[in-house]
Image (tube, rainbow, N blue to C red):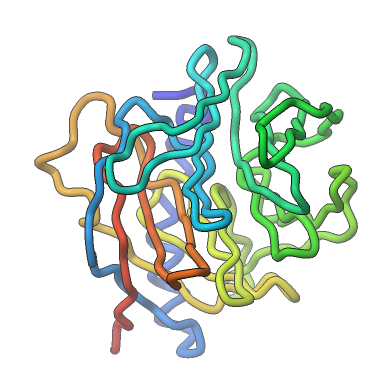
Length: 260
């Protein structure tokens, strides 16, 4: 169990109830469940923080001090193609490529990195004033989460241009973690839950919730297994993939709407 998990262990017990109540109260909020299309190997030593495709290639950033890394991953085998390691003092978080550069956050180090996207060569660091959690892009700007119910829209110097507060039925949805931009919406893992929320980037309203319970079978769970975290969308194939921290599998999924 990480320090972050300890900090919110009690509060998170209330989150599933919040989603259930809100979904019942507002028929406009769609509800989905995941259906597995195909599964692939995933490195169970990877504490997944960021997951995304760029140019048809799969990339992943992982956390934990002394274990943080960024790498290109072969989808079929789950094995690294290229690997970038971080100094032991850093706890790497969300990552994304934007404008020919690779951007990577750290959790509490107050540092954000920039690398050359093609070569993975280090370019520079920036002072980062918040906790770093998830990171994605809409192709025009960076979008980040910090564990609160806020999303930060930033330029390529990590300068905030605007923020939105994410709400479900008027109530803030906290612990927004790994992010992915899919068809004009922001998908976000809600940390320590099996729920993904689909967010309107203009006003922060949650337009849909995704129930991922049962995605990772109990037969694969062991003492190292942690929570759902990792959403990757391949725009070339329109396929969506999910995984979790120290999971042994990565799943191609599709959504099935839950009808009342």
